[in-house]
Image (cartoon, rainbow, N blue to C red; front, side, top):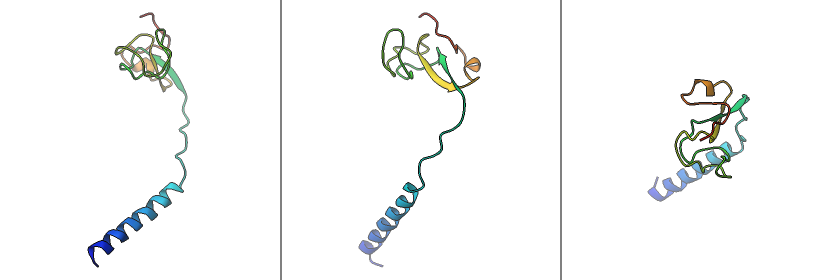
Length: 89
């Protein structure tokens, strides 16, 4: 087979494979309980507002006491500095 023909065949095969994957549908949403965990988030990685800002991703420092992230229920108590209630900064 010539190189251009081989490249065209490979591209066509790749397109067909991606189409089959796309038709499979989205992954199922996992079923687990979650909770807010305060005081463990890296700077700029919080899930929602803090006392000093109104947007996700705006915490100013690591382990900011009023910044939270969702974690599977029961996990927060196992994390160093994790609290299920916000502390004052």
